Amino acid sequence: MTPDLMEAGARALAEHERKAPSVIAGAEPYFGQGVALYVDGITVSFDGFKALNDLHLTINVGELRCIIGPNGAGKTTMMDCITGKTRPDAGKVFFGSNIDLLRLKEPEIAQIGVGRKFQKPTVYEQLSVFENLELALKADRRARATLFSRLSGQQADRIAEVLLLIHLKDEAQRTAGLLSHGQKQWLEIGMLLMQDPKLLLLDEPVAGMTDEETERTAELFLSLEGQHSLVVVEHDMKFVDQLTEGRKTVTVLHEGSVLAEGLLSEVQANEKVVEVYLGR
Ligand code: ADP
Ligand code: MG
Image (cartoon, rainbow, N blue to C red):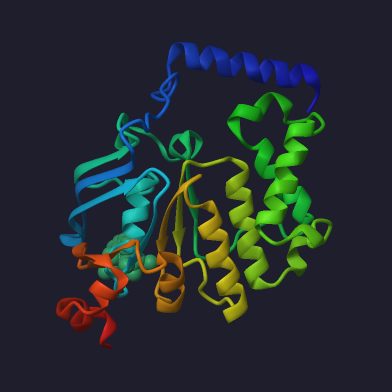
């Protein structure tokens, strides 16, 4: 794209935002009350079947929360509601204490700081690991002006930092398509991190990983805790145990609602949880 085309694009965008101010224009999420995500009584029906049924969930700033529950419990649908992919029939979803996510569109929700990792890795296979991270950085709306410019020192530092975090420093120049399944998952997490999301939603992130990759993924998430809030949906109890460190809350979903919430040891001893999920 030529500079004058880019300029014309920027002008058109500014004009568009002047005419139809986006809901998020100027609105920054407020985390001063310690709440990162507040889900209040959401219900989702598919042809009369309730995939979510009056679901409540509060995630604190910097918290790492694991969500478990049988297949069909509504875990993915819950993430769809938070990210704007599915609109609930009832209930509220707030990011921070001021942003009503149900009024925002999917890309706006991503821009405002909610990152989502789907089950299947989606990286640019032909590009190098480094280029994938660079692209993710430049896709950030706050960096739009620099889309075709060289990386600033600060941006290069951020890429180096993320490469270390995701254990891919030595693979930076490698073509992403040649990475193992686990490494691709880490790269995709790294791409999310380039946008510095306040809240990260991770749907079965260690499915298909080796034991060693799973363990390293747990270490990665533990290192993100505090800086980001994380919601991790997972079936691997060893992984959940590693993440919760014997002291964090686990939420059990069943038939679209919270069946139990507490320490992993507590929910594992809960009769209802054993009956519908862990006892199988
Ligand atoms: P989980 O992720 O906990 O396994 P899901 O959220 O994927 O569960 O699904 C919850 C229930 O909603 C399941 O019974 C599923 O079949 C149903 N469901 C999910 N998405 C749709 C859809 N788009 N249309 C109809 N039913 C759906
Ligand atoms: Mg699912």
